[in-house]
Image 1 (spheres, rainbow, N blue to C red):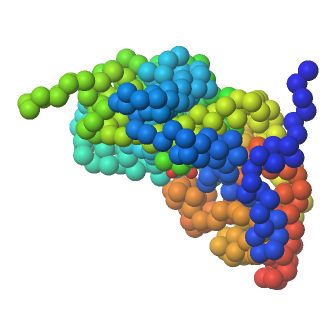
Image 2: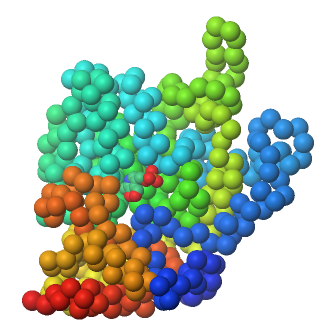
Image 3: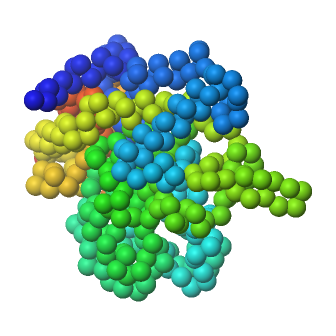
Amino acid sequence: MEAAYDVDEIRRDFPILSTKVNGKPLVYLDSAATSQKPIQVIDAISNYYRTYNSNIHRGMYDISIKATEEYERSKELAAKFLNAGSYRSIVYTKNVTDSINLVALSWGEANIKEGDTILVTAMEHHSNIVPWQLLAKRKKARLEYVGLKDGMFVDMEDLKEKLGRGPKLFAFTHVSNVLGTINPAKEMTEMAHKAGATVLVDGAQAAPHMKVDVRDIGCEFYGLSSHKMLGPAGIGVLYGKEELLEAMEPVTGGGDMIRSVSFDESTWNELPWKFEAGTPNVEGGIGFGAAIEYLNRVGMSRITENDLRLIKYALKRLGEDSSIQVYGPGLEHADRKIGAIPFNINHVHPHDVATIFNSEGVAIRAGHHCAMPLVTKLIGEPAVSRMSFYLYNKEEEVDRAVDAIEKVKKVLRVMSQ
Ligand SMILES: Cc1ncc(COP(=O)(O)O)c(C=O)c1O
């Protein structure tokens, strides 16, 4: 039988969780921005620097061979984690932003023509809007947005209609970083394919919280960032179907991405190195590998369960106070939500909320969450508070956040309605 989920045992692996902020134990509720790191990841990076720091792919000596093996092993782990089929489909980038830009600059340059349409949803992070705006401008193409239903779900009727107009690309987020909404990625991909569109899925908020199977989803591209899933910053993944990656041109040139170079021309390396010019983020890859091993050990389904339990508990606690406005799927749709809860306290600016939370040792995010179009439309101004959860959070921390809300109301004299 599987051991019970022991959040206290997990917490012991995260040194930062025993620190204090303003004299109070840190409550970290901003994992959607970046996750904390377990000692296993910290040690993997430290061990690399201490015992086998070297450049990879070229060294003929032991420590370089080991560094190459560990770095490349992490790609095998990432491929398995996403059920990608092969490490050849796993391109290492800086982060999901970089992954999306790579697709826009390579696949987009070759395939988007004047008058074409690129379709995204109204719940995208700026990372999945701006690269397409830039591409559309370069190509004289159009960028269209699928609307939302009830301010929280992708409007499937609108999606059907806009796919019917034949967009070349449909790019959407698997999980919204603001609303926490889980989008039905497989269904949306199938609909897009029927309409002849290529599909890119932004997995920044999904990959940390749930089992992702890119081949089951069927999308052409899937991106994620290591730093949101226990790994170091500066490394991310672009999964791409092999035949598409094979056909795509590299966007950065230099060492490592070539097979041969003459004064006149060059030929490209095999996948995935064709897209990885220059010395890569070796310690990042090694740390990311340790993060995936950690997630695998805990088990993605158990992480999903824990995160969902916390979401439900927090929604229930926040629902007890009529001066709090919660956005996105509520308790009745909790099974379509993961990771994040956006909320506002009536008549209080989110920056004041986050500042008073901080005085209580509770770290939350306030602002537009890099989703200005969504937040502005939803709330009427580009700011909302957000608490977000991960595998190391527990109910007592939600209670500390609710206590912090009481403090906000007391300090700013907000009455419950
Ligand atoms: C849904 C989503 N997409 C993209 C990003 C961008 O991630 P990064 O800054 O790691 O590239 C984020 C970050 O919050 C996100 O939540």
